[in-house]
Length: 259
Image (cartoon, rainbow, N blue to C red):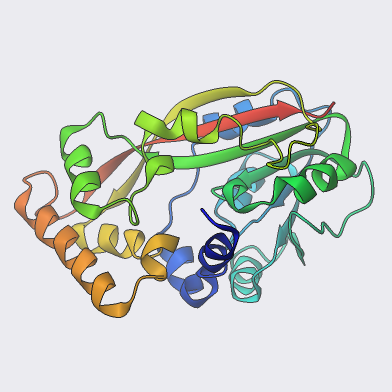
């Protein structure tokens, strides 16, 4: 994605902060535990924390949390829902923390927005020796037939290659590397996936998809057409046409250690 388009997508969430907080899923606890397993201590930075979906899971697991988020509207929602968490304005490229002040940096559905040529050294700066960087992504399990059909009907702007396990590994395997050829600040990547799910109805699943960056930046007519196709598909499927259902998901993790 070109830099100007990436910035447009990355800045689109603020206008939908309340809907994002209401509809986006949390993260599989097993995935977060695996991400943190090699960390040298309990201090965790949730970077690009959004409205606090990953932050809340980290709180539940007993980590010592600091959250950093660049978008003021998203940060407001995070502070509202998790008032006990220290939450600061900042970005992956300018982290408002001292050197070696955290043992792990986690990013929930956010690392793909980072400019790792700048963010990589900055993340390495705030990490303690042997600290961990981990990106987590919630993906729809397209091994389930109706989910694969939903991905096809939605189009790649709504459900893209990072959003299904079929291509998630390839899309994220080098996400920690700078794109300018500079040496990485981190060691060899490890990837793992963990079962997850989210209770949805047809309406709330449409609302969830509507918070994706590719949908948020669509022209209004195209957005309405895309969401209309998704509603019609969900109404046509016995798994999703009536009442609540569990959306089959996985939480994928990319984990690297600071060199």
